[in-house]
Image 1: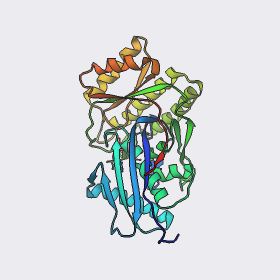
Image 2: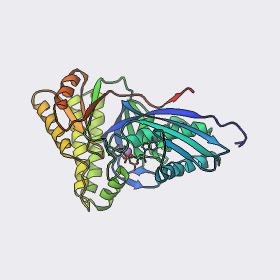
Image 3: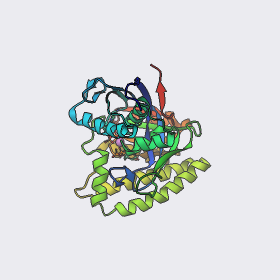
Image 4: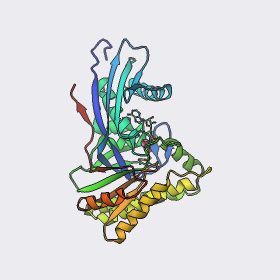
Length: 333
Ligand code: ADP
Ligand code: DP6
Ligand code: CO
């Protein structure tokens, strides 16, 4: 590839996703190969926009994050990621990266998913790599595992694969965002950055939790049940398995050494309130990623009553009402 060609600035937009069957644990940390397959819904309200331009004049990568120059640790993370893309393309130029999160960062709202899906999509196109969507999910994966699922909209499965080189580990769309009228209420209890990142939390449980082995088996089973529920549009089955899978993931962290939990008091309040809603005949189910905030799933017809009920809890700061959202798109300049 001639280095004197013009490298355009490319801007990509990617949405975050909430896992119904969680990715929790890596079998290969370098290649981001997961221990278990996972399944998520892409969210319309949470997204990242990232611009990338490779430029011969730069002496190092520059990362502008939420309109500020990023600190050294964040810049190094992005730079190490771009090194892999530069290697794939055989290009040595540094890049100017600008990214804005329309999602709280590192709070358990999946900013690493939208963040790396947007960065991967913009960087690959800006450097002139011609790859298909499947390969793009694999490039996003090596930035943050959950990011591979954000390449697509709707309901997305990340297949763990079995090969050591990761070539059979990728994300695919099961159903698009118009398939099912579900509402996903993202209940904000805290927008603060978590003290233990998802990456460190899952490593701790893989290394030390006696429950970890059981988790892998259960996740495999839960995935089958969830795909069946999706196929039949059986909301109660989808909700039950989503809730149970999240609780099992969080249980592995309680068994870790040192023990860890991502929940706050408000997390439990929301969980209790969701159960009360169910007791009163409204099917609603919760799930939590690695953070205190809760996502509540319900059918669109019940969205208003679920939202109003949860807003009465004193720990609830804000509710983002989401529907299934789209995959990656490119923005015109
Ligand atoms: P979350 O629950 O938000 O996904 P994680 O612990 O998985 O939390 O990851 C948060 C990290 O992801 C941030 O500290 C940052 O390193 C990275 N990240 C988030 N958004 C972006 C972005 N837009 N561009 C690059 N990296 C990002
Ligand atoms: C609990 O994808 O954020 O949200 O691959 O180390 O970047 P890294 O971790 P990340 O982990 C997500 C964990 C989770 C579950 C999920 O999204 O599937
Ligand atoms: Co994350």
